[in-house]
Length: 295
Image 1 (cartoon, rainbow, N blue to C red):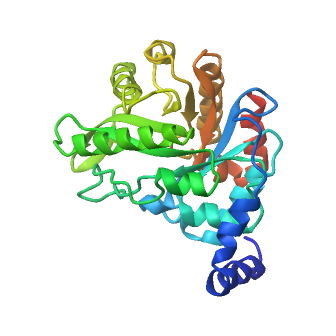
Image 2 (image 1 turned 90 degrees about the vertical axis):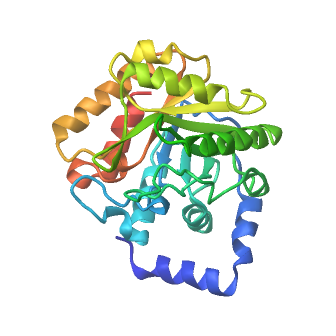
């Protein structure tokens, strides 16, 4: 964990100079491409806390210390080959003030209303960025979680909101990153269906959202028979990391799966969060470098 100077500086700026956030966004050097020198997009995901999802591995409150989280994200972003970050306004604004977003692909998370572990978890309302705010901040795009529960009629509201967001982002020529799942409640808890058939259906629905798909990218999990699943779309896709693995062997297996997925023509990179920020052995730099080496 960093010393208290970060905390004092961030709190002091937020109290006395909140306008410094917009100023930092206005002067941030933007990337010239969505892809890094390796020809792929390597993103760090840090949008979990705003959905109440603080667990990483066996640490229930791993992401509950903001300065520690920022320290880990900044370390990850400093590694060669990492050229993007995904986050909610509070985290991205802290990173702006710390100067960590220069020349990075910055994607703002748009919907965090479906809080983890709640009765309304599948109500993925848009509670964070909108397209206008992302354009004003000069960020590169917005991301939306779009879970489809065949047994929940509220799903259609999420689909409608996601479609509107895709259209508005495209109107601003910003990436619309859609993260689709077929989801179900099992014993009261939400579970995503991680099969090729489910992902084919989810991606097919996600690809058709909005008035144009020109700026739509998909954020997808690893599933069995990944090649067949990814054949469902021509849209560019990023592979997500999923839950952090405490077991080094499980982490190595995840690396192998990411490596195989990157060989598929539609897969344009990785967007990994807890697996790299809270890896086995707690060596963030080594974990990030191992992932970058796959690119």
